[in-house]
Amino acid sequence: MEYRVIHRFKDLQDNNRVYSVGDRYQGKKTKKRIAELSGAKNKIGTPLIEKIEEE
Image: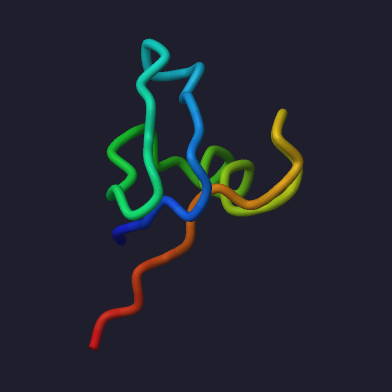
């Protein structure tokens, strides 16, 4: 599955890689990590990525 960044953030678990809005998320794609980044239970408190729906 692919994910798109919807809020700019620095991935503290990926050598401080900075993701900008519209980037494809390239970091860890474990269930726990995806849940953290796509929900509000992260340091920023807002969803940072969303699943890219296939057409």
